[in-house]
Picture (cartoon, rainbow, N blue to C red):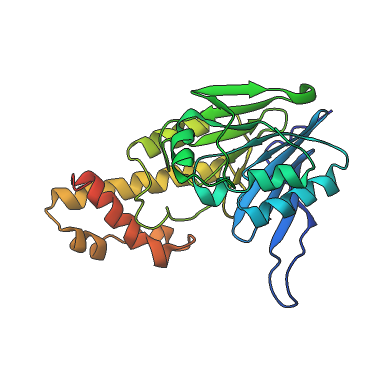
Length: 287
């Protein structure tokens, strides 16, 4: 029986080696709930869910990461087969390595699941280490290996047009990659983000009854973290649109908009001004 963890983020580090003395470990595996684990490879996170029928792995990350990812799965769930690999989206830094993972598990022909719009960008790369999905869906998909239900939700365009969110109802845990993170700026100038769709996707994420959310980068969060992310983008949008109405140029907006209340967030110094510029181009009609 899998317990649901409510109102708390419970993570227990159970692995983390593969580095030289004095260096941070290349990888780390943490338990987020019963049978649910986060696998961190340097700055990227995957997730895997142990079910009575086997293991479902989210985001193999890279060829090198996937081999270690598979080793961790075998260590934590010895003898359990890989039931499926899920791509959160088509970006190569999250969805490469499925072939290496499946091979390291000693298997063949494991289903690879993704949103239907992920197929074309993956196919266009022609990278054998990023095989195309073999199972796709449009809006929502659910499956229950051994009776443990796993849901995949398409929330609309956000960081890409093919982002899905994984959700394990019995644990109240979601897996959301790149379009949200814990108290961190959006990536650089937000060039790969769709606005205002990004805001709509975050609203739809909050419609899911999760309590804990595991991210593609950084530590996990709770519902309040997602609400803060939404508030940040709302505040940024409002500030940028006000600057446009005043007739400010992009350079002037980038210089004058600060939003100091977010200055403690990750990548503020490096990316905040770039976030301003990205949204200025969107709402001024330059993109």
